[in-house]
Length: 138
Length: 130
Ligand code: HEM
Image 1 (cartoon, helix red, strand yellow):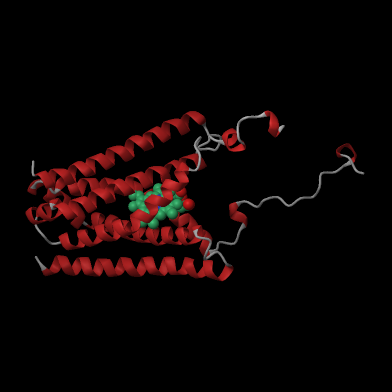
Image 2: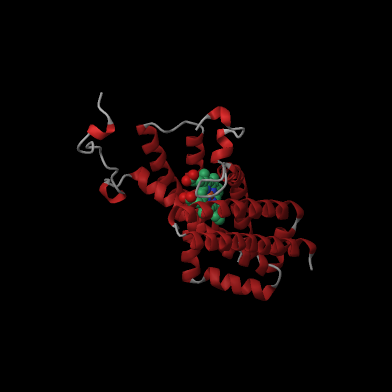
């Protein structure tokens, strides 16, 4: 019987590779994207607070609308829309995984692709509807 | 450890020793709010779109009407709870200094409660018209 004292060299066990060793994969990018969008949405709630608080008076609302209509405002709101939809779809993906489904090699690739394509498509559709709604009643 | 010599269960011995110093409560609440967030986010986006292009008086009236206000309040409560737990997980993952972690976790709690209450106040103000 070999005891601990008799083993000479440490066993050649594989080391766990760090993040940059891996070939970037869609599933991995989507995982990171879920965290980054969650982080962005967190601070974006300040805009939600500003919007609903400003709605109580015409001057405040005009200030919010001026910001929302500026190019930087539009850019932030467009990014926020995408982050929200992407994170929501990613969240649904997480909930599917929590139920024990969608973890196979093919399913998880498909879910990741659906998440990305779906979030871009829905964001564009929402903005098309939004811009039409604004143009229509002004 | 001799199991028979201990009156405490194995669970009781590990409880409170994770990075969060709490048990599965965060995990579970994150899931509950994630599920609630789905219909509430869809509803909030639809409400927002219907308000686009309306003037302030019309927007205030719609946002403050009972059904819409209640949906918005639920949305605010759910996302702020959810994002507090989510940000706590991010802090626990990347901040290993105990003092910095404590301060950031507190700041997280303050921020999420402040944003949540400010938004809820905004909605209630529209509803009660004060
Ligand atoms: C719209 C529906 C939403 C769903 C279904 C959802 C779902 C989820 C799920 C399942 C997680 C945990 C992921 C994991 O276990 O790694 C998560 C994390 C998170 N969510 Fe959401 N979420 C939603 C909306 C939001 C919103 C509106 C915010 C902020 C305002 C937000 C902020 C966060 C943050 C900060 C995290 C932590 C990210 C991480 O740990 O990597 N989420 N979300």
